[in-house]
Amino acid sequence: MSSKSSGSKSTYKTMDDIASFIDGMKFRRKTFGGVDELDVLRQMEALQQVYRSVYENQAAYYQALIDERDAMIARLKRG
Image (cartoon, one colour):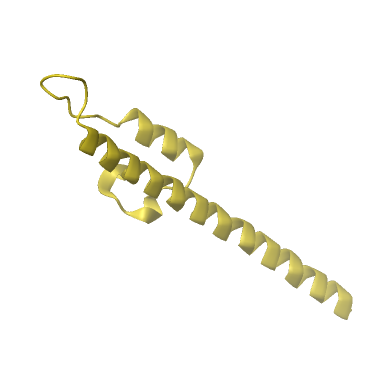
């Protein structure tokens, strides 16, 4: 897996990071009957954390843009 697999929430910022994470996912196989269900659940939890990290980073970015726009509007209204 890439260096982004360390689990640090701040390393995942874009949808490309999510795609890379998914590409690197590996599931433990059971001797009989496919994959280990507990491993799949753990992997899905990790994927959910990656999605949350990307969402939070994008939300912060867009909030900063909104704040910047609001500040610009306030400056224009003052003079």
